[in-house]
Length: 330
View 1 (cartoon, rainbow, N blue to C red):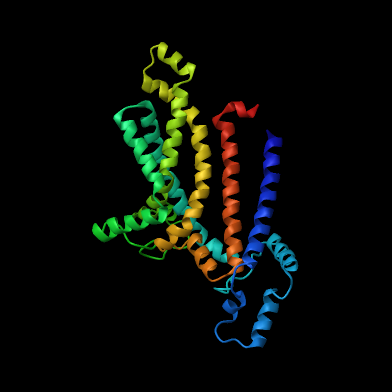
View 2: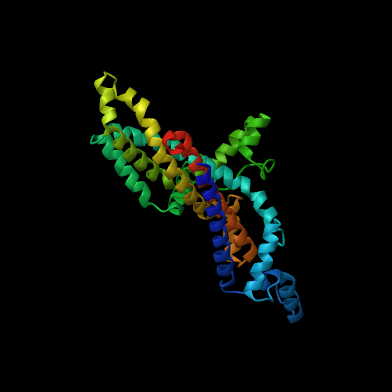
């Protein structure tokens, strides 16, 4: 088992290096001149030449990659061409907002999708099962940006229940984990305000993966119900609900946990759209602005951070398998 985890760690390092190579070369192939973003409007030729030398863009792409890799190993992600601030500091400042949004979205999707999948499986073929299956297919067909805009129109434009954009009404905890900080500090007003603001963006992202979790749970639960040991429990006089409780939940978790790990990557990608729609001050919003302005260091930094998060989450999923299914320990 230790050897398996060691191989996974080596694989993670190789994948991160491959991501770095691809995104570094890709960022240099983008159209436009990033120096123009650094020097501002109407620069002289001397200013342009000095900026190229200062940013290391006067070297060939191989030398640029070597120099960037050396700095990255030391924890330096470079300076943003757009904000003139260290990319590392920008990502740290915005990470909490994105982490809170994605975590809340995962929790919502599990709280809704897992029970729906179990209920659908235990009522296979009934009207309720058909309705849930239809809802799952319908849910998967809608683009996430459309869901976000429709929720804004309904809950802000028509009903006025939730705010249109932003993370909080105040900026007191804007750069931290607002919900967690509010709970720890006992600030009920701040907690309610932060939940009020995160409701629509997190629901938008949760709806984006809800159909996947529901269908996966349903499929895994049906497989469990069809196993011989399930009928054995029933033959001993246990009710169907109790048998599901004793055997179904744990055996279904392996498939669901796998989907949650993959869905985490989908949610990270979804932050680019959702954070832009709801003006959420996270990494996705920062990444969109960086791409639009050809901000090479920021684009590379965002991509590496997202790739690292996705790889680490899937590694933790592998660890979780050991506790969910004891057979994997052998």
